[in-house]
Length: 488
Image (cartoon, rainbow, N blue to C red; front, side, top):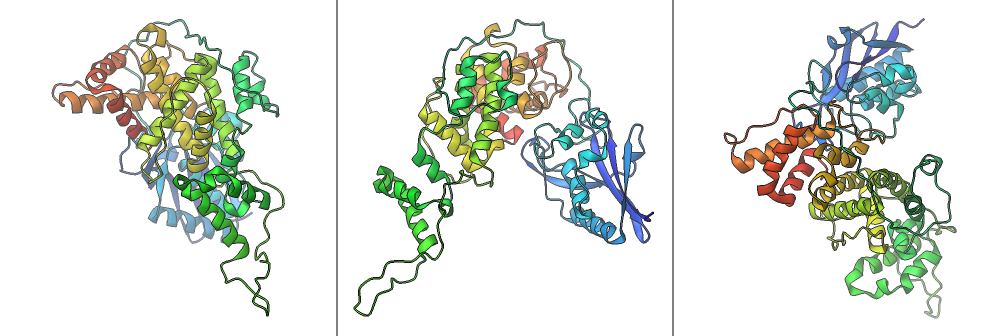
C-alpha cells in the first residue's frame, strides 16, 4: 500500500457545509486546506470576491466531519502539493456559484490525475446532509451546475454564521394564482422530460418552452455564430440581407468581410499572364453543414436559452406566464442599464408580458453574449422588480414570498414558498443587507435602526423595506440590490 495519501473532508456544519483537502506522505508536511471568500466585499454573493486558501486543520477535527482517503503515487502527491501551494499563493477569485470550496477540492483531485468527481467519494446521504440552508454536497453532485451552493464567510460555523431570530413568522397567505392566457407558438421538437412531465403545467407554459426551441429570425441566429462557423450559404444570406446594407449595422458588413478574410486570406489577388484575375481559392475550406450557435462562453446558445427558460417556466407555474414574461422583459432592460462592459446599448423592451419577436431575440442575444448564468441573474432581479411594481398589498404576496419566487431558483431546486418556514436563505440575507445599506444612506446611520441579518424575511424585514423603499424609489433600491448580489 502506498505511503502517500490524499484525504478529502466533508464538514456538515454551518448553513452549507464545507469541503477541505490534504496530502501527506514521506517528505510532505500534512496541511489541510479549504477555499473561502477573502477579505473583499462579502456582500458580493454572486459576483467575484477575492479568494483565500485557509488552514482547515482545526476545522476537520470537529464533530461529524467525514474523511475519505485516497492512495497516491509519489508523483501524484507532488502534483497535488504543487497545486495547493500555487492556490495558496494565487487563489484567484471566489465566485459563489462557480469557484468555491467544491472547485478547489475538485482541482486537487484533477491534479492527482484521473481521480473522478468529488461527489463520487461520498455517498449521497453524506452529501445532501451538509448544511442547514443548502448543501455544498448537492453542488458537488451537480459539478457542472453551480446553482445550489451557498458558501459564506464565517471562521467557526461554516462559511456563514448565525441563526434566524428577531422576526415573527408571517401568517400563511393564499398562494397567488396566475390568470394569464398568453400563448407562444409551438416548436417542432418535443420538450425535455423533466420539463414536460410536470402534470400541473399549464398548456401556455408548455407552449412557451417549445417556442424557445425555434427561431423567429434565422438571420439573427447566423449573426450569433463565429464567422469561422458560417457556411457559404449562410454568408450568402447575410450578404443579401437588408442588414448588410444598413449603415447603422456596420458590424454586419464587417462580419461578412471577416468571413472572406478567414476563408480566402488577405493576400493580393492572383492574375494570369494576360493580367486577368484568377478565380480565388479557399485558404480555409468553409463548413459544409450549419452548426449550432455558441456563445462567447463556448456553450451552445440553445442550451443556455432552454436552461434559463426552465427557470422562467418555474415562475410562470406560480404566477402565470404573462407575469413571468414581464419579469423577463424587466430583467433584460436592467441588464442593458447596468451592464458595464462596453456593450452597445440596446433599446428598452416594452413590459407587456408578451413573448414577442423582440423579447425573444433579446433573450437569445444576451445568452449568447453574456452566458446563461448572468442572464438568469438579471431575470431574477427583473422578476423581483416586476412583482414589486405590479401591485401593492396582499395580491402580490408578502415580501418574503416575492423574494422567494424571484431568487430561490438561483440557489436551489424549484420549491413552493412556505410562509411559516423561518430558515435563513441566501436571498434573504442580501435583501436585508440592501435594506440596511439603503436605510443608512437615506436616513443616516443614527436615524435608521438596522435589521438583524438572519436571512429570514418576516414582518420586521417587510416593514423596514417599506420604510426605506418609499423615499428611495424602485430605481435606487434595485441598483443597490443588484450590487449586493454581485449581478452586474
